[in-house]
Every structure is written in structure tokens, then in C-alpha cells.
Image (cartoon, rainbow, N blue to C red; front, side, top):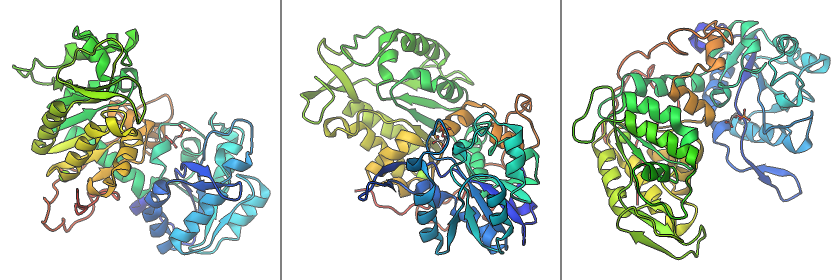
Length: 448
Ligand code: 3PG
Ligand code: MG
């Protein structure tokens, strides 16, 4: 995959697809505010490197899911303002996505200047990967850089189509995400321990299947543990558990190694052996620790129990590599936060290389103030899961010259340069930085 090192960008217009799809909240003046600017910050290394090289930047992103053209509430205006603050430079917001006036703005850019296009999903043809829109986007620049890892699983005009029309390369964020995520799957420091939680087995089948092939242990938490427990013959009370998920769970259990006799290419699977149960999902719910997994009628399981948490955190402490995706319980409600907090703290303190896969687990980390204490937090949601599953991401594939519908036989990325070695707490970092992901973080945050 080509990187910024392979592009000549000086005094050239560079179209950079970023993922500035940030969460918004209502603002004071009836407008909207950015609730979390992580994704904007994550694109700064690429933007700053390009500006430093004298590139003329044309940034493009989607924001939300506008259905029928422009929606004022989904304008990139607040993003342009926030990016300007972070860069300490002026960021001009274009009045649209493509067209004459936007092209004139790109032609007026000077070296190092930044133009942000309006929400690319305001434009018809974006999500259909319309070749005409891809051509119009290509006319805005001389070179294309894709740094939108979070949107790399979409084959849209700004993520896929345009990559074929200009000299193109991956930005530092996308490059680091792909290297890190494929690195832990292909060359993990053993043992590799995966913790998978969340609500539905159906959403995580591919991820669990992949980890059963490459990991030593897969530990299950969150509401999705009930289909597994049900498949093992336990009663689940009122816990979330549908028939479809029970079927998926049964198949996944069949693929796991026997706990006592590990089989090559088959990870062991751990499911909870105690639970926290509640009479409903609320902060003031009646709740108690259940020293087993037979959930009584009228109760629902809402967190893993303390013994399970101790077992899981023990495995995390021993791991060479940890991947965590999905909360262990309903952590937003205090009575059911213990398991997720315990796992988050263990991941934060673990001596091994720790990766947290986007979405809810990243929010959980932030909820406990631990996001800086893990080695790598992915900015992707669906993109992270699809990459881990081994699926081809169209946005990445296009940078390798591949077209949609014709995936390369080896998947989406070449294997990374080798086993990642990282310093243990207190040791200095590696002197060479070329294998380090831009979001790699040194340990330092205190776990209290
Ligand atoms: C995300 O938030 O996962 C990405 O920005 C992709 O957004 P989408 O699911 O609306 O395509
Ligand atoms: Mg670590």
C-alpha cells in the first residue's frame, strides 16, 4: 500500500478523504456542537505532514447520514471551526462538495492552506460510488490521499471511486490502523487474548470466528454471553437472548478448543461463570451478584460477575497481545459497570500490546478515563470489525490498485513488516518509528 512517503505533494492540490464523522450534541444557540473530536485529532498527523510538505489541502468527509441532499444540522461548519482551532490555522469551508465555485476555491489555494468541502453525503452519487461524482472530485486535486479508516469499508465515490483517478496513497492514520490491526492478527506477541462483548452475537460472529483461529483465548462478555450460556443449557431468565443468536453461539462453541486439551488453530473460549443480575435496566434497579449462571425468572443478567472479571483480568495480565471489543455489561448504569471497568483497567495496565477496537469499547474506555492508557484505540467501528474479520475494505483495496468486486486473493493488505516489539512500562520507546502506528500510545496514564 502506498503511503505519504510515495507521493510528491509540494505545491500540489491534495484531496484528503478524512473521517470527520464525529458525534454531535445540541449546542447553546440552537446549533450543534462536537461531542467528541477524537476523529479530528486522529487525522492531524496526516494533515500536518502534508502542510509541512507544502501541499494545498482539500479535505473531504461525510458527517452523519443525510438522506436527501443538504441538511443544515449536518454541515461541516462546526468541524471546520474545530479543525482550525486544533491546527492553529485558517480552515475555509467550501459552499458545497463539487462544481465550479468549489473548483475555483481549490485553484486559489496556496501552499499549506486548508479547504474543507461540505458534507460529501449532501452530494447525490456519493454513496452509490457514481463515476461522474468521482470524476468531479478528482478535478479538485492533483493527488488523492485516503486517511478515512473509519469509512474504508464503504465503496463510495470519495473513498473508492476517486482513488482510481488520481495518484493515490494512504494517510498516516489509515496506514497505522491497517498495520496495527493486521499485525496483531498475523504476528501477535503470544499469547493473544481477545475479549469480545456487546449485545448481539450476530454482529460479532466474523470477529469471534477469526479470533478462534488466531487467538489463544476468546473471552465473551456483555449481553451476548446469554446465547452462549443458553446453548450450554443454562437458564437465562429475562436476559437478552434470541434464537438466532443461540444458533450462532452453538456453532462458535463447536469451533472452540476443548478447554482441557487445546487444539492447534482453535482458541479456547471462556464464557462467564458468575453474573450480576438485576430486575431491570436502570440506575436504581434491584441487583445482586449471582454466584453461578442460572438466571432466575424475573431477573436479567446485566454484567459479568466478580469471579469472571477476576478470571478475565488474570488472562489479560498474562497476555502478550490483547484485543478488546465490546463492553462486558450495561456499564452506563452504575450497578452494572463493574465488569467493564475491571476489563478496561486490566487492559490499561496490561504489560502486553493492547488494542481496543472502536465504537462502544472506546466509549467505555473514555467513560473510565482510560483511553490514553492503552496502546492503540481504533477510530473505526464497522471498518475495524470488517478488517478483523478478514474482509477486504474497498477504501484500502483501491489504494492497492484493486477495484470493487475484485478482491485480491490475499485479502486487503500485505502483511506488516514483522512482529511488533514494544517497550514495557518504564523502558524507552523504539528509536525507529516506521512500524509505529500514529495512535500508538505510551503507557503513562494512572489507573486508580
Ligand atoms: C463510522 O462512523 O463508522 C464511519 O464514519 C462510517 O459511517 P457510516 O456507517 O455512516 O458509513
Ligand atoms: Mg500494554
